Length: 120
Length: 114
Image (tube, rainbow over all chains, first blue to last red; front, side, top):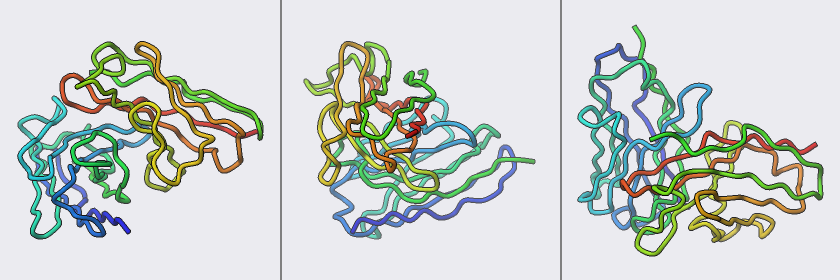
């Protein structure tokens, strides 16, 4: 059974940094692209960044370019999101999501999310 | 890039069929990337993780009821649920890959089963 478990969320001040993690199990992690999707309070889902199975293909939302970095450690089955220069509008539940196959942009497994609150 | 446009809410009675629309642009829903069209639909019950219901416009993942079907015309994709059941009451989100190599979601549609 595929399991994705996010951790590392919390309260951070505007301009601060935070790293959230996603522990994956139940599938061959290195064979699948992974993504971070967020949901701000009262809003819909918003894809933020994606990374290929080997870590070599990264795509991201314009609003997070230069601030957020996605990475993965295939030896540990871990996905990471490093968030710098955080803004109030980055407040959201952050979900890691697995590609359906290879690098296809359909997400067939999701974690339960970790809440990131940016506030002074 | 703006979110895909979905109706905020739809409703139907048990046994009926409903359709949820999702409108984008020629840069996302209307775009065939590598000869394929990457439109997905997700179901989300309160407090639960989203569940993939439809991918590549019309395909259902294993385990998804055949009461769920997808289609596309031009820049608009649609999700149809036939034989509506109480358990179908949830939020539904469409998404599409874009020609900028990003993924864009719709704002979500709340389905109420009367």
